[in-house]
Image 1: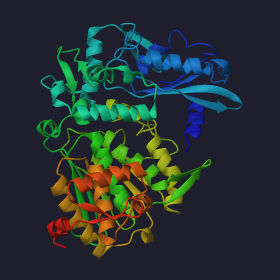
Image 2: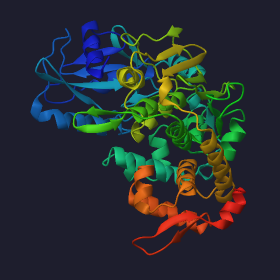
Image 3: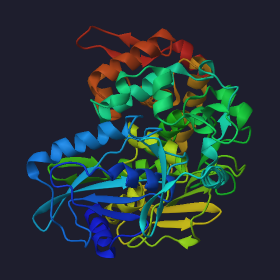
Length: 491
């Protein structure tokens, strides 16, 4: 089911606890943030602008679409309008020749107010919550389910890896160049993103578990969650143990990059056309499932997340706070975020499109990646995802694999913490290629599928550590493995 199909299904259902229609032809309705606040505080929901109370599509004024979207984004980031802020990104949808605006509002792990008032949601609409006991009940309900919002008041900004905050800004800038967070300093961005909060019951204030997982130094994450890890395995030749293994115990941003590098290393790629663009099936499928593995995990549960590649499938498991049980029906499922703040942050980075998009996109793309097969998403205390792959696409590479392992271990030992996991994997691939035959920049660019600037930077780093050397003239020269590195590898 595509996003447009889901919108049509929701419009057929009529208004309810998770669906709201508003006409909004020329401007945002005065009570729109009461609904947004209520959705955030209850179970989330879908808001449609340009639809009347009876479900008739009246459309929004074409000349005001950009203004309506801009006002909604700006006001959702304004603590005077919505506190704490929760940036929303509306989507324009055309149905029956008329344009409407769809806003997906996830459930939040925090309590939100608009103009200082808390709102909740029922089948009858939005209602004010002024009784302190009722607000306390809302807080308790969220805290018992959303452990990402647990406050660690002893954690300060110095416990975070500042380079990760810069990395996040660069990703946000690439995804949304005019994103309002880009104008904020580190502390302001963390607060606005909902990663620093105040407990309305105890008065405790500080950074949350979500903040630690996203930006914490490795030793801080280990101290708070000693059981935390993601275990990535390949089991094709050696089913009793494994052919390759990667244990990840770092922040969620680098964890995502490390898992995607593992995917690139071990899974075949196919391409498809989307409009006039040629795109990678592998990347578009696994960016979704890797993101889901990370953002929807119950991190206080000691059950380790796993990512296992077999000869005909990829299986993923992670601890879960279930919303139901059994296989997810793609044509009728209702998406629920398990870690709304983390999930929302990944949306801002451009690594997640919207809530529920992973299941929909994987189902849409899998028919080309593994014809005749279907993915499985199984809800339970442990969430399980099974992605089929074609048997014939994966071939064992015993001799190459042994060389690759030696090079990888030697480079990891040589570079240690000089570069992150993703760059290290690329350097290993480049070094492995050069170990087989001497290559120039043009050859490496073709093999590695990276731009020339990146390859030159990699070669400069490998030369610095005595791994490769350049031989010959500037125009006709090539790179080869140094004798020093060969001895280190004992090849």
